[in-house]
Length: 338
Ligand code: SF4
Image (cartoon, rainbow, N blue to C red; front, side, top):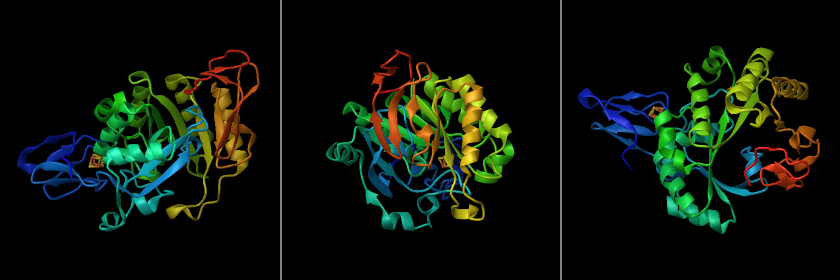
């Protein structure tokens, strides 16, 4: 059980965790919001190091990352717990587990074993996914370092609520930042995830791109009546265009009833298409409708010459018109890592 990398000691054996933006102040014997960092006599420990809940060799398109090694497999690994408590969580069984359950159902996968499994299953890299990677930060840091030594790519699938200093710690070893921008209002983040200061997510995403040259893709799961209004969708689209650039992919995905939002309907396709049009009007070049296999916006079409460059169906991807990061037909820059 390692000591946390990022925390401050306070008077009376209290500590402040600086791993995510909650910056929990934790008394001795207590844990933070995520329940995965615990203060033991004034020393902060991470409880879930290498304790995996789920492992799979997934298509990178499932993350979803569409402009990052298309068609490759990512060794995907998740732990336990979360620093958010989203009403619609699809993985609530691992993100909100009962107290003792994680340790009974965990599989120990130390960093070297994760690297070995990545190679054995012919994956090109590792993705920390399924639950929030920030809350087993020490494990992802050690694994990411090892992955880069082994020429593997590294991906965070994240809610983006990491602190800037944690990002800067793992930044040299991380290639892709697949971040949720769940909505664009204080009320929405409060109601959905009980988070008040969500704008730090935007600052960190920008920092991932600008300071660490990570490949960034944004996902918004559109939930009827909660974040499907034009105001929030325009806010997200404009922010991506202005701060991350017009070539940043934006995935607008279909919500299906889950967890505490079983009373809401699935997102109508027309809503996703409205979001798509809002993205185009904001100037974004790549908007993808997700969770709708067969929808025409799954494909990547060159914005300059109109030719198909990556053909997709669900998680299947076939590259037909790429030359590195550019369009093979007209040479336009398309923001791909290959
Ligand atoms: S990682 Fe956990 S303990 Fe640390 S600040 Fe975030 S929620 Fe609190």
